[in-house]
Each structure stands twice: as structure tokens, then as C-alpha cells.
Length: 622
Image 1: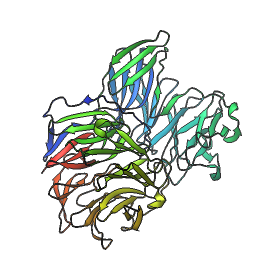
Image 2 (image 1 turned 90 degrees about the vertical axis):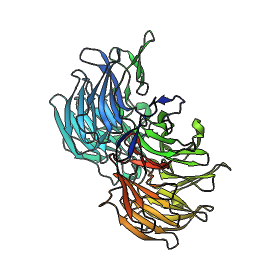
Image 3 (image 1 turned 45 degrees about the vertical axis):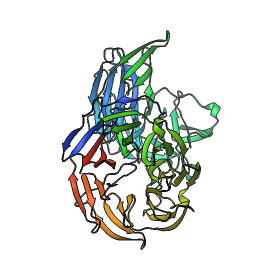
């Protein structure tokens, strides 16, 4: 499931040494070696400054690592003493996308279909309720004190009364044929609740709790690509926009809306809530949390009147950031990136040492060409020349490409091809070509490749051709408009298609492609089927379902499933092990069952296949 990650980090040159001594790799069994955590840092998914039961200033943070939102961190702002409170349910890689600190000092969130309340006075989770609504995208508190949440992906609406502990689940109240991101919610002083929806088509929905009835505020003709927006004002009314960021404003009251001038807006009611980036920095006594760093594990509190500051250190547990994938660099190291937080990491197999540093976004796809190494990243579909640790940003390709899925080093030694899905709410991604020598750029839209689809896999072919495999998945929050993924052959020089076809009906994504030495192409479809494609006949000559014997393949946002060694043997990374393809029969055999799940690939270096499990770098020696 794709999620709306919008954090964008700048590059800094400070290295964090993770493994100060060589020889620290360990084996979990079967010849698999664990080389350590790529980036042992967690991400804050909502932070508030408040007080505990003794009136002491404390900082509360929802902690997120590769496992998901795993704990609530509570730090004494004066001493740095920290306590962790494990989530009362399994996060299963889900995490908070919104939270709220209520007027009576309770901290709420809803994710992985669980609504929870944390009380910093009692230092405990004091309420939990399971729901069938996945995760909240916005929360608010109405004038009666009720906590409201509206959820992804189908606008599920719930409320909680902190006084009588009554929890109500109103179900999914607004239907669309795409995953909805309700990023704002507000309640008027007459009991109606409103929320803004996006991203395929903006909308504001009004809901009457008394009748359980919901109604959209705008006709389809008034909806735009983007998200609707609402907020509660001090005067008790709700104001909003059919499209956030537009010039038009509306006043909503008792389920009705009327257009007003911007000058007639009242200021927002102070409610301590936001998305996953919530950062409420003011303590009840007026002191300010001016700096809070989970990487350095330090915070700074300031007394505004005197500008006096105090820095304290704290600690917390982390199993490491969500790791996107790995590849071998020209200097024989293992490079890759993590997300939330977004970090670059490098592993030196000879010294058995890992380092990591901040990264300019989420490094989805990667490749090397000659003596250079490149990353394709989210957000904005950027292409980055790593340039020996001094990154050069080549281009941003949003909205045509926003979340890269593949970066291909073309065999001419100078061209890179990037593909991926488009920006939020869009359908159909394109291809970006970068000529390193001529410094020329070509960006193709989906209409020039395969309409309403994006390219998931790419492989260079002989005679100046490129084979691509598409995905029907739209951009995050977009509408799926195609229902059969396709293979296509493009002429590299003209950038025009020679051929395309729905080769395997029903397939939604061609996970990975690999050109063999005998001119055939190996492929993976939907992570569950292996096939062999004949380039001359332009047809499938062999196909095998993988599920019964091998299970699904590894994936991540840029799948690197096929790996070849120096002898030309081709391997497949499955979720539960590594397989090998026999050249003549195409039969797949298990090489090793992995004691850890293989999440992402993957590359070969000096007799070892490297891969990712969770936040750890692993390898297998033949």
C-alpha cells in the first residue's frame, strides 16, 4: 500500500558511525549473514509538549521504525529521562498519520484499525478500540469535547467521548472508486462534522451525527484535482475551500455552505492537531521546545522571556528505519537509502563497517554507470548523481513521475532512464531520459508510452531497444483507470513504441525483468508468476506460478528481484529465500531458505548476494 509521505530532507555531511568495530556481522543461520541495521534511527509521527501528573514538562512522541508505529516515547524535558510505552496492538508497518492532544491533556491517534488514548498523567494507554477503518488522516475535538477522526481509504468516521468513554463507529460515509485522503476535519457549534477529501477530485463532506447522514458540499463539476479543506473557527462556524490553496472560501453551518469573501473569515480555533508532522512546541508554563532531534537524541528547551536555553540528552530504542533497497557502488561498497527518517547508508564489506547520513529525500531506485552512482527519489521524482558524497540534483519530474520505481543505466555508458508513478491524485506516469554527456533531458508522459499506466520494470535490449513492463497502479490517491498491465518495446533513439501488448491478461504489475545471455527475457508478474518472454516471437514461451512452491517475490518500491553472478547464473529473491533459474529448462530451484523475510533487493558482490530484511542488510555466500 502506498502512503502519503511528504517529508523532504536536505543533505548534510555529518556521518553517523553505526558499527565502530569490524567483524560485527552475525549469522542467523543457513549461511545468511546479518551485517547490521542500515540506520538505527526512528521517526517522529507526532510530537507534543505537555505536562505529566507531577506537573513536569514532558515531550510525547509517536515512534515509528520499519515495524511501524511501535511505541509512545515520553521524555522529561528537564532531565532527559525517557520512558517508552509499547503500543497495545501490533503496528504491522502502519503508523500514525494524524494525532491530537485534547483539551484535557490526552494524546490520541488511530492507525492499523486501532483508536488509542494515552494519558501522560497516568503514564499509560487508557483506552483502545478496534475499528475497521485502517488509519486516520485527520482528527479534531468538537465543542462538547468529543474526539473525531476520519480515515483512509474510504472516509470512515469515528468519535470518542472522553467523559462517558463511549466510542462510535459511523462506518464509511462517502464512497469513491479511489483511495481517499481526508486530510482535514472540523465540527461546527451545531454538531455537524465536515471533512476535506482528495486527491483525485477535491470535496468537502458534511456529516450529521444525529441522523447518520453524509452529503457532499460540492457538485462534481466544481471538484478539482487536489484536496478539499476545512477548519473550525473561534466563532464556532466551519470555513473551508473546495480546493485547498484556491481563492474561493465557504462558510459551513448546519450542513449548508455559502460562498464568502476571504475578509469575512474568522481565525481558527486553537486545537492541537495536525498530520504526521504534528509538532506542538509550547509547554503549559510557556517554555518552548525549540529543538528536538531523534537522530542526535537531544532536545533544547527555551524560556522565551530570557532566551535562556537548556540542552538535554535522551535515549530510546529503535530497530531501524524502513530500508528501501541496495546496490553495489563502483568502489565496491553497498549503497542504499531508508525512509522516515530519510537516510543514505554505505556498508563496506571489507571493513565490515556501516555509516549513514541524512539524505535528500527517499532513495527509491538506484544504479551505477561506469564510475558513477545514481539515485532516483521520492518526492518529486528527482534524479541524483551521488558524485562521491557530494550529490548533484539532475532533475525533478513531478507530476509526471513523483514516486520512482526504476532507474536503468543504458548500456551506451551515458544515458539514464527513470520511470515511476505520478503525483498524488494523478493516473499514468512517464519516462525520463538523461544524457550525461550532452546534458539533455527528455520527459515522456504516459500518453507517449502507455496511457493511464506507469512503468514498473525496464531492461535494455540489443539493437537500441528498451523493454518495459507497466503497472496499473495510479499515483497515491489516484484513480485506477487501466486493468491489465502491458509489456512494450520502445526504440531508444526515437523514444517511440515499436510494440505493446497485454501479454498476460489480468496482471496488474510486471515486477521485474531480466535479459538473459541467449536473448530471452525473464520476468515476474504481480510477484507471483515467473515467465520467459521471446523477443523475436513477442510472446510468452514459459510461465510458472510461484505461489505453491516458492511464495511471493521480494519487492519494495523499486523491485530488484533478479540478480546475476559473474558466471551468468540468474537468481530470484523470494520473500522466504533465494532461488536459481536453470538456463535450459527454466526450472526454478531453491538455493537457500532464508531465516528472515527478504523484503527488498538486491545485488551481487564478490560471491555474495545482498538483500534487505526489515532494517537490516543481509547477504548469502554461495
